[in-house]
Image (cartoon, rainbow, N blue to C red; front, side, top):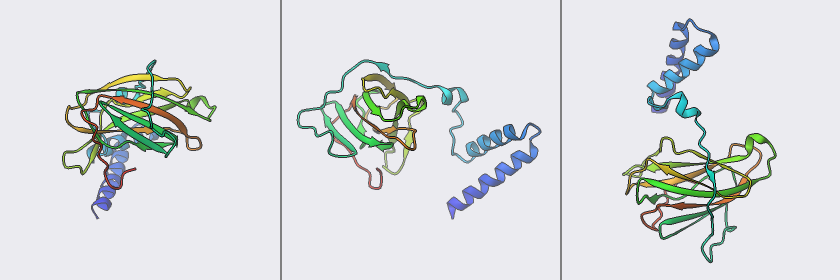
Length: 204
């Protein structure tokens, strides 16, 4: 019922904005949608168009060497924490997330590589993003500015993601935009506060 009321409110806000707008239909629709979702809490009011359009690329370098005994092909997503590092292997995925881990400081250094069968220039990168778990473990929130693009040429790239809170729990989301092809590769995430990983029921 609550969700139904929310969508009704969204539709009313959209209609009102369109009826009051004197600009072109396309621009009116775009502005109306942005304003409506911001009012209803679906979009962060502080997020600027410039920030959303910025594409942060990881830089070439680094190395991902899995620990001895780590079976990188045993599943779609395989993880292991060792010391301050979380190792991740992913095999033929489009969107997967790690377990939650505690951040030791305000940053994580993520080194990764991947390959894809796609030859399209539009699908030669995969994305890494950080999400924070609430203290009551009920919700997650995106860490603003944490999305980084990694080139899928099979070599390692690295980037240090900042803006974290020491002691809070986070997960890494790995995504690939193609609806036909997938990515296979690995990550080394440095900056963990402990080797303990937390899984939330219902999350993949």
